[in-house]
Length: 95
Image (cartoon, rainbow, N blue to C red):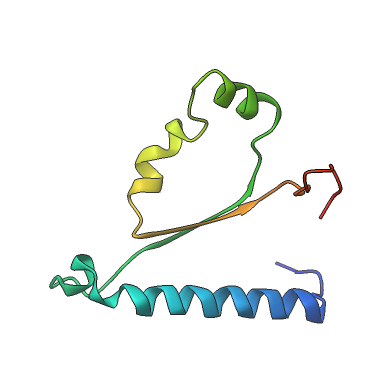
């Protein structure tokens, strides 16, 4: 499998994300799950979460676009998701 070369910015972003993840895991060491006899934990990564169009319409109707994945999502100790859309400020400017 071949991967496209990454920019220095992308590498720094991934490094900061992993640092945050490690910090979050360290901070949760006092949680009940960390005190159990089980010394493992699970991390679930999901990407390109899109909440416009059909998922957005479902949310407006009171539905949950993640319902079909609920069992998988709840099975992990940590869930990390990446938004697949651009964010905009109140004026509608892309950020």
